[in-house]
Length: 355
Image (tube, rainbow, N blue to C red; front, side):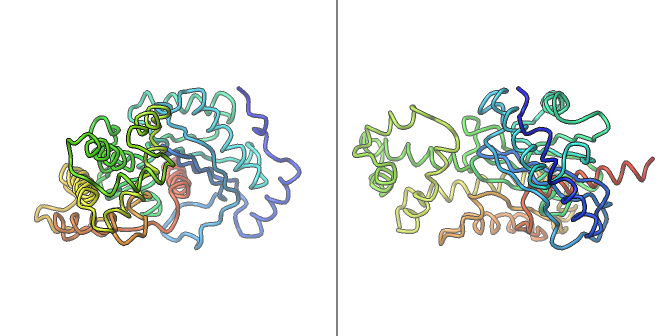
């Protein structure tokens, strides 16, 4: 389906171009996209040759938000429509159109195989960009890493939001991942995984198969339900990942109030997330032969950056540093969509240099 906004906003085009040229960026624009399990963000930034010196702050000409673009969660049609929508709206906001785009980098959750990359590239090529525009498709973990390293693919990233994944690169470009297969296959450190365990604890307590927990009253109140029996209908009426993951703050508040069941769920989640990082680091040898080499670990996602008293991100960092004293945990200064844009500029500049 053709997006009605896909031609951009022509009346704003000259204004946007003049603004970019006044700031020293007059050679087209770059689009960076971060498509997670809950929402998708696209930014439009001016093109500048990638190098060690980047402008601070990174100039954002346009930014747009749309729904989930993981086809495994919402299906191909909805994922494709959201991609077209968010790209078009970012261009409209920037005052640019498709003719000014130099490159696009899309970090999309659910992209785990070359066939996934090819599919998304075909979606973008079909209706949006001519062949001279460089289109790069990556897993969303890779652009999240780039947001912490400002476009350099080295080190490890840990994402823990609705879903979770650890992904890394060594200096030779070898890559490795751990987790990211969804909660059914063991991503218990994700927001969905934490919430699913909390709901299970409530049901077990109600049945008499498990101990009483503060989660029962807290979750029922949050959902406007009167009995644990009603959780069954609530859960299966719409078992979407984001809807379930939204219960994480209730689990954290119960843990902060001294609920042992909630505390154990969060401790187990922190252990699982740290183990995912450990697996990636060891496979790539990022810690060096003595286990003490320095390397970045980029921490991204609402589970890790919730800023609550029971700080999951802090607990994960402690565990990572026990494994690897040289690990440098980083909270990115820019969002993953900007990391995607920087990655596209990196790819384009390398291409230019080689040619």
